[in-house]
Length: 256
Image (cartoon, rainbow, N blue to C red; front, side, top):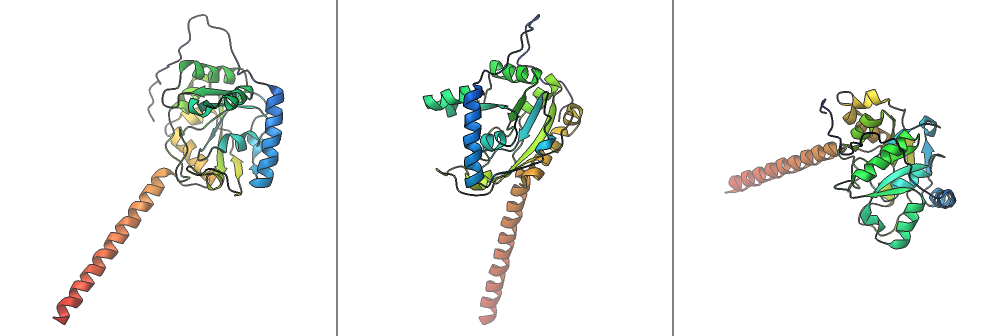
């Protein structure tokens, strides 16, 4: 990880004092959370472990793996605190869903080029003492492994000095992986790790260490581990094929 300063795309004008929070409906959020929790308890046998690691008050950044559309919901029902999210704008094409997302406090962004305004809102939420959940892989994993983290976590921590709680979501990929239309009744466990101070996250290798901790909590491999394993398997298959070919050639020669 680079030691140099990260370019600040949301530098604030001189004299800017106003701190905004995401507008949301307490009623819609409360009802939505209750319904989601009831469904997840029955269909996914949802459990939360280590939720006491989440500070009850003050700003906190929850950093989780992302392998399913279920991730924001199961993370949200695993703590009593309201959690603000960033979500790709493409999810809000359906007008009623867009309305609902606004009511529960989701901020829509372009996944490939997050707008300055959206990033300012996240920073303001943290400065206002709220909890924000991020999925720094940027997109859902295809195989449940943990991909590289984008720069958002480091940026938010550097700007706000916020405490980070690593979160592992175990089972959501099996319950509703990419390419499937409907969720399956697979058990989902959300595990919260110990809080990390900003200094630990921003230290040399801190982001990669945080990513490894998320993978450990999710009981999931890192992407490069999966790639290395597949490479070894292919190499072993090629070696085995060469041996069989050599044996066949030797047998044919002996018979001649």
